[in-house]
Length: 328
View (cartoon, rainbow, N blue to C red):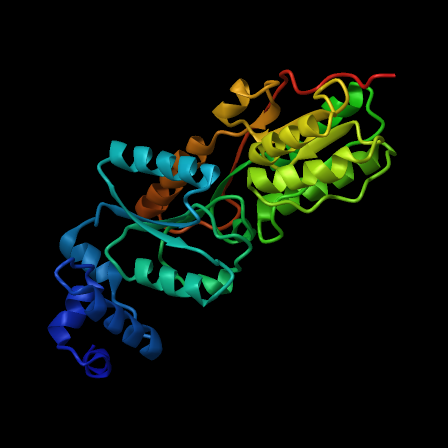
């Protein structure tokens, strides 16, 4: 501890307060101490702290771009579940998970007074970028980290299969796809499952259309697809893409669902009130959050678990007005 204090230019007492997660430390001083800890590989003895003080009654939460609907709803589920059992939440957001920014954020969280860490979203960041103390209870969702840590994730593959099969069963020859971002594990799973589902039934696999998670990207994709009269069915990686695409189709004179059927993914409430109402795959984001809190508390009581502890949350196809058989 004295080495950390010397490098950071503070007293050993200040280092101790930072290690214990005390709020009575100036932010710039805290950052300086944390950088010194990281540089020297210093890790406070969390077990000794817990023995002295009992549970910290706080869960750390790491997410990416909380303004996105999925991340916001999942985080709301974490907050609800934590509050229900008397825990507070310490939230940190990172913009670019596959970077040093993630490692620093995790280091700050894991060296504060938390009982465990919930990773709501970390893109395609790898295990090596977390650099967690081995005894830290962790729970993750829909990411490459599910192979290493306990997880609560939606049945992405099942939901995509149901969406694609629904369109094929209506009589569409094939299904086009507007993708989510390349740095999203959920996006990659949806794209791979769309491809595999078409291949399994011997249907043509069209070139996927690059997108993102925003309605604007769906709109641009819709302008591109509307120009092709052979396009009669589109599966979008999320609802916001689908809503943007429907507007573009309308502006280009392609009627939904008479000319083009559209399916989204997520089951956002706004889809029920779009025109036409959006057929979509619903996932229970809040349940993701609740289940991850449960996994963290389970480990706090019984010890760390590995990636074999996996909760798969069912998805549901909601058939509404944006899909119909193709016209002759």
